[in-house]
Length: 203
Image (cartoon, rainbow, N blue to C red; front, side, top):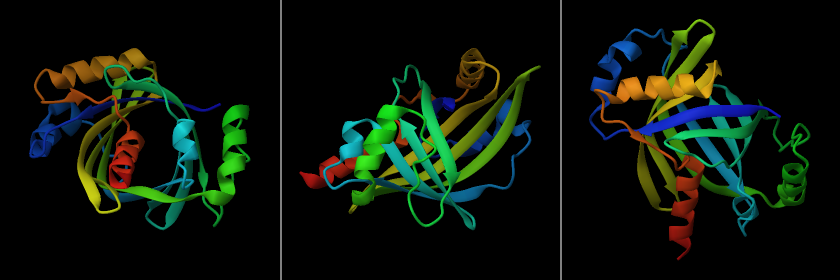
C-alpha cells in the first residue's frame, strides 16, 4: 500500500514573495515549471465516500489527467501519513489497484454513483530540497481556490512532501522555515475544506 508522508503549512495572502526569497527555498532547484492544477473531487449524492473518509479526485496536469484515491489520516502540526493511489485516467474510474480491502469495497459499491462535488484550482511551484544525504523533500507552493457550488475559499499552502528520508526531516525543515516566515501548521486537508463548503451549500 503506497503511503504519502507530507507536512502542510498555510500562509497569509501577500507573503508569497517573502517565501520565494527564503534562502532554503530560493536555493532549491525547481522541479519543472510552475503549473496550474485543477482537481475535481467526486462522491455519491449521499456523500458515501466522505462518510468513509475516502477522497477520489481527477487532476488535470497539462495534457494528462491523473486519478487519485486517498484515505484520511490524523494530522498533527500539519504532518500526515495516508494511503494514496495514483494512476492515469482512461475515461472511467478504475479502482482495481486499490489494495486496501475495505477501501476497495466502498469504492466498488459507490463507483456507479460518483458525481463531481467540488474543485480545487491553484498555481503550484515545486522545488526539490536536499535535507541531508539520503533525504529529499519536495517543496510545493500552492496558491488558488477551493470551490463548491457558488462558494469558494482562498488557498495559500506550502506543502512539504517526503521523497526520501523520514518524517523528522519534514519537521526540521518546517521548523527552520517557520523561524522567519509566517507559516501555520495546517491539519485540514484540501479535501476536508472542500467538503466543508459542500455541507455549507447544502444548508
